Image 1 (cartoon, rainbow, N blue to C red):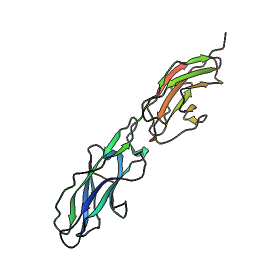
Image 2 (tube, rainbow, N blue to C red):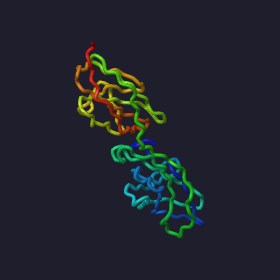
Image 3 (cartoon, rainbow, N blue to C red):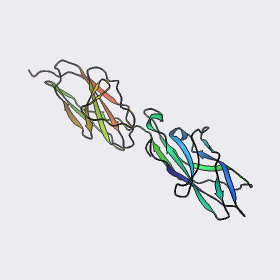
Image 4 (tube, one colour):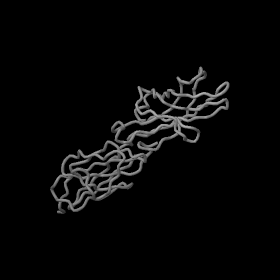
Length: 239
């Protein structure tokens, strides 16, 4: 799941009374170690994702406490669901980020009667906030008012590469989850290229001027790489 994505089912659990009816008013959900940092919300729902019986957005470590619930329980076994919502890109840890394999188990139920049993199984939902590998620079060829650029794109989860151009060392960086248009600006840098290719030519440059170029790879989840710079390169008039 990409950062900022919709809620997704991670676990199911069943409830039933030995006799009559009851109501679960609170329960805890424990996520896999180190994964809550990528989760914005945990929600308990009925089968199929509705109705909602309660949410938590402020865990203590990996422990998410659902209070004020009103989960109906009868003598007929009934399935309920645990859903997790990924954090937005803006709330995720910065580059290079990480990938979070989220599992969820339910426990510590509060009801009118004594509760027994345990939840030991869960599916796994992977939240992808991990930056892709940087593209690698090849041979650059300055010419008359131009620089020919060559690079190689990393394999794996690769969506596109953006190349910035500047006359100074490039400190501008893309915003996680955002896309950009070739020919526009990003900060003080010119967006030289956006696409999936491995070569482009920067034209209409000033001979004798230093130019720096920086690649940023993006994956399908909207994560950007840290960036790899080359330069300075000076276009030179033909002699």
